[in-house]
Length: 318
View 1 (cartoon, rainbow, N blue to C red):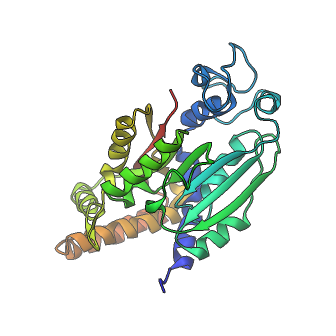
View 2: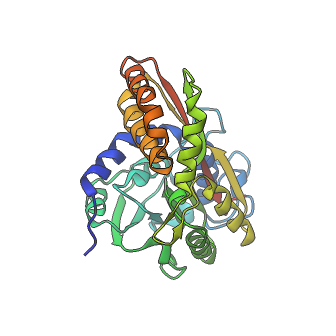
């Protein structure tokens, strides 16, 4: 039987969830929602939301007016298109369910989320926290335990949308190719967010930063049980795979910007970042001992800010 470190990992997911929510691209949500609901430029070719809406159709604020996720009116346009049929969203590598907690309240209309993960303990936690849609409609949450890298188009056949958060950089090229093929086989939009891209910036900076970052990136690309992980190359590989299947792709940066208000997350992230770098390059251990103490002290004193680069990817939406 496979053992899962559900508790510690769930604690980490809980700690990072507010920073994840702040970082994810609101622009891509606006494009996605316009496609799903049949409003705005993203629906100009019809698509799964129904016929294209004319200029000035109700639904969304323009980008920059009110911020991402702001509805101008109720869900009458959505109801006209779909009746009572819910959006079906398959979320891959769901963990404790941060993606539906973030995205479901930004989408109007009833929704059914199917959360996929291999860890039953995480899925139990994810299924217990049910969000509400933007217009107050019901959101149902179902869970499915299994290997997400073996999902096929048949497994996702009812999907209006496929999502994932902080997943791609932990996969291999073959695994990403299979997931993209499954999504492309369904033909629905896919929103994959928060893929690590290998950009880290500290303020104040230190000469060791770049060397440790390079070691961490090499660790992200390591081979584990015969699996060659893509790490910071994953988002670009996924984008190329979607393009190979003829699906339009939009990529936007989604960096964590961590300051004094998130000192606990900085320290937890920093310890894992440094530990991975030293595992990859044991020669760094002695050289980074003083560096680590200084960084932790700066974070505790509110004098450290960190920017951690990610990319968000939206496929299947013009």
